[in-house]
Image (tube, rainbow, N blue to C red; front, side, top):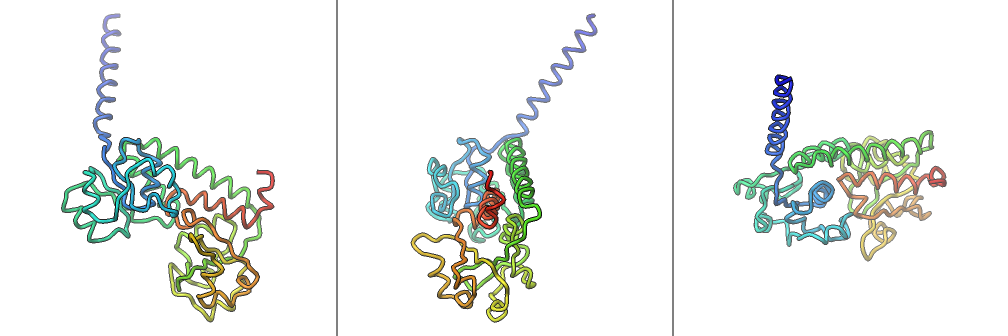
Length: 286
């Protein structure tokens, strides 16, 4: 009986010290600064409030999906390394399009950096969520968020099963268009749409093929909302959009900029929104 009691005590002590070791190994960062809107989204979703030292200088803007929530936290005045370091961070979340000069200064400062290199697909976002979750000591939160996103994407796919895809292109006042391997392509893939630019062989972000575009069969032009201006007026200044039948017929879809341009997990909400706009008959009972 004494040996059994001794074995039980050894087991309990082993479990206790294993638990303490796990807690010590987690060592979550205490002062985290986000440099961009996408990393703002991730930080707000995963971090404990006390871990957030500052969000990006765009965190309170119309392009931030979580602008209302972000107003609870300090915001960078600009994107400079000097401003970031003024918050005494122990971890800075950056993106691949952060200023190289700022990144270089931050590296020399010795602060821990995490750079989001890939964001084109949801799988890229899931990888980022898990890695940032580990850094913050919030792995479980990341896993729960990913599971929720996967469930919503699966439900959307079931709702759109067998639907006739709508033919669309990205339309903006800039002289570029989105083909395959872009966030717009993924939006189309999940919302029951065909990206006509991708169908025409365009990959990535490319200059608008003005003459070729006039021969494309396009049902809708999709863009994002700009404060104080209408998509119709913005596209009027860019050939060949104003010559397309879809433009003349007013078949334009303006999505909130904060959703349309997001590179975080909030793109799932964009999928759902566009799917409901393009295929309302599939969501009448929901």
